Length: 255
Length: 310
Image (tube, rainbow over all chains, first blue to last red; front, side, top):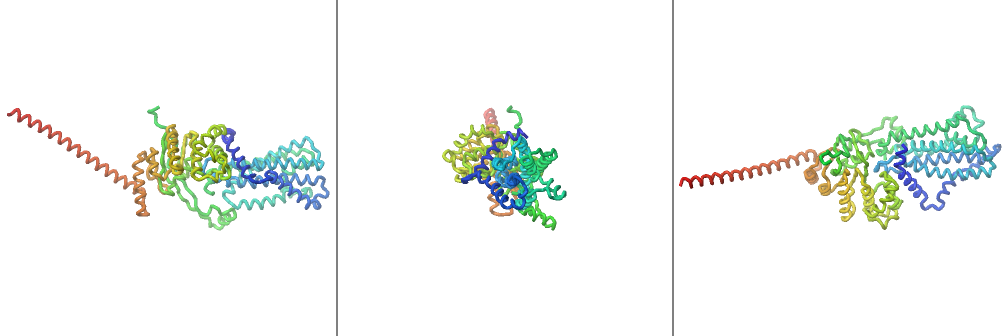
């Protein structure tokens, strides 16, 4: 695996470069623009929901930002990931290259967008008088698992997108539902136990909850939470790898 | 080394490739579920290549000929490993450098330099190697003054020149060229043909797909004739098969329902008959010569006897 990665290092680098050049060509704002998106969503939510959900909640802006930060990355990464294989069909039908490279190279870009938002997030935390503790270092854990989870979901979606072009539309509807179901702007405390179970099975919500526990609660999440995040990531990556392995030479019949 | 058998670089055995055509493509998930439920889901098998076998050894150059839709490009996709054969096996030894449909896979928005690196990366080269070879690639493809132009501004001839330069300047072990040399102007054509000879001399195995029979005659030492996915001939008698193929192409213009297998057999039979007649004529000539020789001897003998009698 690592030998293979080494062999395709140049391909990976060149694909990342190409994606950057194509995306930021002729845009003055460039990367700043992609960062504005979560911020704008944050402000709209803040204005709309402050009165309904934020009245009794300290640090509501940070609470919102935690949700938006995680959710926007997930939506961005999976949305772009889905297109990655199809967009490169001109290449993989002519040259024998490892097809997951397209997705991996593309995910670098969304990762950088996320990193920039993350920096802004810390700035907002500071404005919002959040206590910075050593536990903030643990945020690396959900970032790592979410990165893997995004890649896994991206692999599955990009493979499905080759077979069914309307997956794009269906996924957008699904992400919309997921946004409302991930407690980005409300609290889950008052829900019935059955609903709590639904939240517990929602990978995006679990990541948001992890970040909130560290940033707002100042406590280290349970071992069960850690295992759950790892489990989600592993399941997604396994499902994606299986699809790519199984359909490796069959994709080209569909493009 | 000279008496050792040449090693097969590519060997295809009974390769068949099936395409599915019908409802499964471009219908979307919702439609797919509906058709599955209502039983209106139909797919039809289409065999693009059926039962083709051939081997290419070190230093060989195989020409693949055949009319449009004969399955040439599909077969090459199998050889390069982009596709897997539905039946049969393909074995490769060594690194494949393939040029399928030329300028595809290049990105119009990137510059020539960026595309060169990207293509090199796809073919599995390292950055160090590309840094060292880049000047050579640009020199060979004569694109020095276009290095930083977006690729879409190049002419198609320039694009294929770059593609050829990248694939061939890297000492490939297996080189696959699909309709490559028919593009480019005369000067570049000669240059690329010289380059190809050099590669073949280096021991690489090459497959050339071409509609130019003259080129196949000139460059190749083996030939594979495909028609409608079937293998009509695979042999090292390049001249013979090319003759047949050209006759077939001419005859086909007369009638659309023309069976290339029968044509190949008929043409081969005709050629065999011609050869037989030629052999007979040669034999007769030899016999006549012998007869003349014997008669001369007898005449000499008779003359000597009359002399002694007298």
